[in-house]
Length: 240
Length: 240
Image (cartoon, chains in turn cyan, green):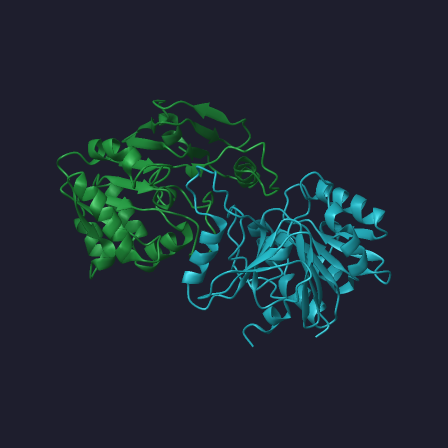
């Protein structure tokens, strides 16, 4: 499988600029062969402003940016893309828009069959997985399904957050929410990517990158922690 | 309209016991005429344990409890109910189960036409509104629609949480999430009920109760704050 993915937890790390904390990984990921990146701004309402932000940053790293919302034919834009970057925002809005434009299967085909490199951050990471069942976002719109692009056979929880024992808030912790997901039958593993971490997938190899540990939840097992640099390739064999 | 609702933000307040912070309001709400309350535990996985908790608390306040998951015919249980209490947990799981058992329209009819008192807490408050578009919960299952029981013409965000300026977490604040909802067309007002607050609805009168302020979000307007005791009846006229 030619698959190449860079799945980032968050676009902006506290105190830093947009995509600043992962800019080196982005350059290594897209390399010098990719000249133009197709940006997908559907997760935010103001697509022009979002494309401007992404374009500014990626140009500074040496890449031209085409925003899919400016294309007359979005499916054709995916067919021609050298590289794809789906940005964060609201995951429900993003997935619904991808389905509205018939892009889910097209992106899947381009990435899995043609080896087009795919980068996602936050919501863009969520939609790359089995489903958006483990998004943190508010369901502001109703997508036709929660099934997503399925570039990996497990789910991710971006912006993974440890419980703050000082908090007096009584809403469920992130861990409790993911455990509720695993109370449902046949649910895949969930990789909790803390802010600052990202997953690099190359074919059948997956590596944790970034500055923070990740927490893995698998149905019926206690959660486990992984340090940056860990080989998480076993996750790609899930469900096989 | 005979409608009587007690919509509680949260079942447990920090440092207190289950339903302790609202026990006086519960007794005033159900009064002495209601002898038995129909409890709906669908939002949590372990329904037996949940029914036991609810039964223990409500019995101490003078009410017998029938849990709908123990009824051979849940629709018939709603038809015979003197009072209904839907507890918190995962809102997606709750709404899906209500639809699976054909209970949404039956509960609506009993409450709006027959005047059966309805109490909800957290997820049980969410499902009483127009839709669950403003839940905080993880979409662990896929309900057939986000439209809910519709006992009031607006939405509620339970466990409403103010932004902590000390936080280094970069996920959207609650206010930003609700504002993203209002970027979508034709979206109703959202009442942010902080933990400790609740809304009492009697016919066309709505009153904020409890110990904390509520924050109201209406599309295209700046948010506004309401003190406990505020008359929020204008929200019931929304969409008319």
